[in-house]
Image (cartoon, rainbow, N blue to C red; front, side, top):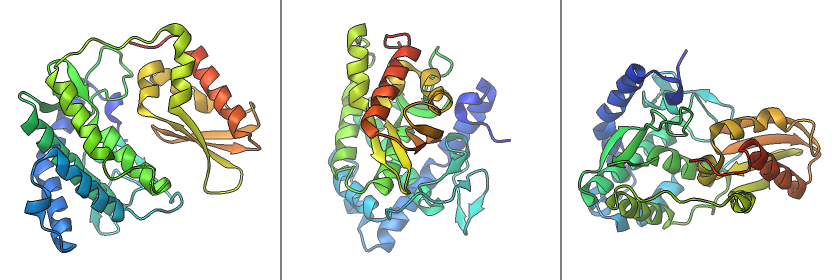
Length: 292
């Protein structure tokens, strides 16, 4: 059985990380190939600047057709529908429901290009295996861009943006990737900034801004969106308990995670009541305070 990154032993994670590094040139070459096939000029578009990410992301989004949630496909295979699947991806997302195999390869190429930009802009920045003393940290063992003690979950963020665009076109403006990467460059240049502390009374307010509820693809289905900061604020365990705790409350009959940022719920639900319940439950599960 394929293990997720955060389930691996250090030795297993080192091996998976080596595979990820080995595939970086191939992923970038595939992005260049796709651009050329579409009549773009790879050398002009991929000039290595942060600014180049704005037109690139605009083009990439056009290659990710929006649509309803697909039947999931297993990523622990070499090929799906004639498309090669990046070997490392099976450890990040064992089952994919939003992106096609070809889209996964395309976004993997974007991840490689982002890595090249950041490493060129920040002296000492590099890909490394993510690590945090908290065992269930969201990027544990997953490849991250890092400098000193600062780590950036590029894979989680870029693939999350792609899935969100497929689910909700217009949710990811053309300059969003550019702005994100510029922020990462700034953070990594500072090496190890002091952690931001959120006062306990403000935790539920912070969560309210990071949790969203939207109507799903079919009647009676709702999508609870959990932005990246939610994981930082309350930790993995509190979030993972939601799927177990929700059924039987506020009209919810079923709940399951589609990926790390999306919880699908079903039932006769009032979205405002659902959001209030989720925020209150996350605050309670986290002990009423933000996690380190």
